[in-house]
Amino acid sequence: MDRAKRIRQILSTRGLTLYEVSQRSAEVFGRSSRYFIPQHFCYNLSVPSFRPDIHRILALSWITNYRVCDWLAIFGFHLDDIPRLRLLAAWPQTVVLDSSVYDQNAWIPWFAERLRNAPGSSITPLSRILKRATPKRANEMLASNRANFLYAKVGHGDNFAFPRLVPGSIIRVDTRHVDTALSSIGVSPSRQVFLVEHGLLFKLGHLRRTSEHRIALCSSQFPFSQIALTLNREVRIHGVVDAEIRPVLNKPTCGVDTSLANVSRQASPASDSPKSLNHLIRSSRIKTGFSFRQASAVSRWIADLLADPLYFTAIGTLCDYETISVPPRHIQKIISLCILYGIGFWDFLRASNLQVEPLAGDPIPDEFIFRVGAKALQRSHQGRDGGESHEMETAFLSTLINQWEELPLFIKDSLDSISGLKKFSLSDVFWVGGDLHPIHPYLLNASLLAINRRAKQPPRSPEKAFWQQPLYVAIRRNGSYLCGACTLEMGRLVVYPYADSSMLPGPPRIEDAEVVGQVTAVLRRLP
Image 1 (cartoon, rainbow, N blue to C red):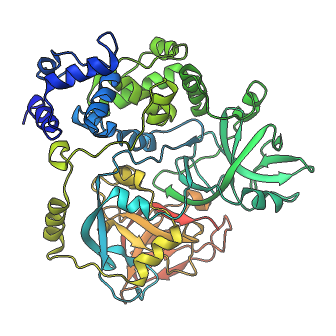
Image 2 (image 1 turned 60 degrees about the vertical axis):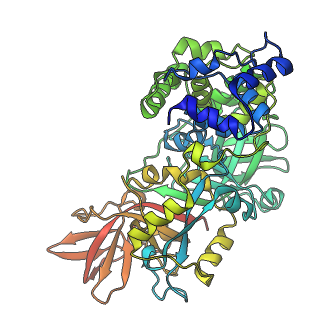
Image 3 (image 1 turned 45 degrees about the vertical axis):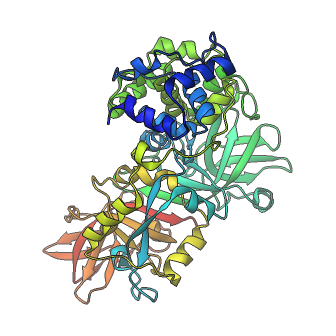
């Protein structure tokens, strides 16, 4: 179905024609308004490259009472690309992620349990516990969340929390009970890791108290220069890091970063969200640590991934955007800026003085927006599992959800990249929550592991530091699993346990086991 015909059918569900939409837009907004939809709009729809600007999208939403997000999708703009691509990029500074789920009517794959009792093994393939079931709507799953957390990605220049947190990790910040956590801080570095906003930068690190109203951002492992901060004036404490998704394929490195000290001399204290568009764009760029040249290069990466050159923004144009008060003409530019600078799409529109209610109106029916429906998803899952899934409420799944309190649905489209696997599936995940005595620090309070089953050759000699050591899952002859740093020596698997959180391995032990795969990512709670 061509786009013009599809839009006519959508309008017909509201008893409208394109001519009537044009007339109504003239009556409400005026013919000289940017919201006016001309009568030749129908002809423009037949041109594949045609994309209306944001004002006409808002007008279509207002006239039809269908959601803005859905109208954008009709014209090829999928807002969930914003959190997806933001997760994939590498940032100089720690950035707060856009955790929005824009299409709240989307279908989300869901699971049923294979076991009526809790798994008997401490490390178990998740495919033995769960199987595909009937998908659920995103809004249904979001309604079950019991708390709202802040999410961030650790920048490669943020070292105060190393090695508890490493560059590239996706972290969850508990914003509740900040005052209680601060009251427990003493003269020694805190065990907890805090997300701190100082001036225009976000930083992660340990805190220690230097006086009644002053604290210091510091490292618990390395002799970095500490940054003294005054509470309630120079710094805003957003919360305590309580969980992490850690990619472990790349070996993290640690280096001295002085960007916080440099910015602290020129940045203003943290304040409420900027009101003007140019202020929002400028302050958001500074928070990422990007220069104009770096931001332009990342926009080219975005354009390549989304296969549309209009997402690319030149250096001079990025500079001009920090002086404007109206949104860019092309929606591609707006989306690109939101990805580059971590701006929520609705926040961008509000700063542009465009009044919009994200959830106002009805969702466009699935058959017009090309959502994958529940029946199609269920058929594909039945073919994969060999039979129909029967959902049952058991302790494992419900307990796991209750423990985590919130499902971060915004990462659903980024699991391939986070795990480093081309086609991420349930068979690539291991549950390790039953391992009460893990032999590696990364596995303390861990719940899930992603593994690459094609990587089965551990290195010949172990690295000295635990954060430099690749992890492997192996299966013993009795069918039980183990996970840790290991090597192959003369055909035998040698495992190197780490005592608690020590940086040096304990005595090696020989295991009669076969390597299943290399760990690529770890989901864990921070102790």
